[in-house]
Amino acid sequence: MTKGEPSNRLELITSANGIAHENAHDALADVTALIAVTKLIKQKQPQLYNYLLKMRDKKVVQQLVNVDDKKPFVYASGRYDKEFAKTTVAFPLTTSRNGGVVVYDLRYDPTPFVELSTEELSKKIFASREERQAENFVKLPVKELQYNRCPAVAPLGVLEQGDGWQKISLDLKTVQKHQNILLNHPDFAEKLRTIFENKPAFKKLPDPEAQLYDGFLNDRDRLQIEAIRNADERELADFHPEFQDERLAPLLLHYKARNFPRSLSEDDLAQWEAWRAQHLQAQLPGFMTALHRLAPTAADEQQFILQELQLWAESVLPVIDS
Image 1 (cartoon, helix red, strand yellow):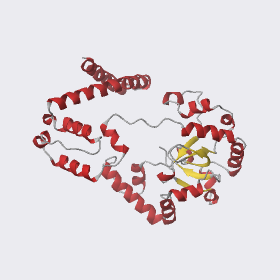
Image 2 (cartoon, one colour):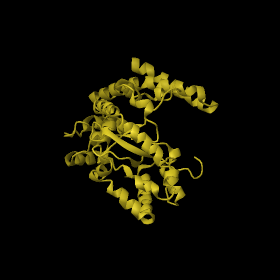
Image 3 (cartoon, one colour):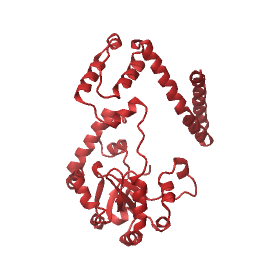
């Protein structure tokens, strides 16, 4: 990145502010560094710190972002372009499925989108990565804002302070022009409401490890987990806890297979091998596609790595097919 360019990367923020951050991307190191950054913000910018802390209350956010009283607002999000300091002026359009709100980026003229059909809008919203990278693809500048995720939002007036408008390369005239277009096409918001309220729910991931993000564990299961962590290989072989959370039994199998394979019974081993084969078989097509997509632009050293990865993938195929 170029000097002076805004960034949300933690290792760059800590470096620029003289904060110790060894072992970047290590979970504990990152949490410690993030706490230090937070303390620095509180010390140097207490007004900003206290304001954003209030955004934990979704009722406070709803006062600013309200589909019943639609007004433009300043919105900073990692989803926005870094060339505009990841900040824009957004406009609340309609509700979304999970109690959030669909907002439009007023940086962009809505004219090309307001007359599109529900089907055409849906194709843009749910376009694949490959479709989005196509030369003729035009992104629809809408996103979901979740009230309960501490969004960084502020009233429009903050841009009047100093060179606020210039910093995000936007102006009030453009905002008002694009807002009026949206207000003159209420059917556009209605089409988006239909799309977002009927979008498919996220599929539950089949991997036990990934399913941990689906919800918290209860205290009884936490005690069982602590016992597992303290057990050695011999103890694990004879340890058969009765979990209340259905995610934990397959997770225990994976834990034993990866760390204490000798603790597995014959049935456990058969289950593990079946899951491993199924997992590889499901992932390999996408893996091979990714290798082929990277190959044309890879340098010589990278080509060697890609070839080695392909050879590895081919080497596990017979195991899966047998």
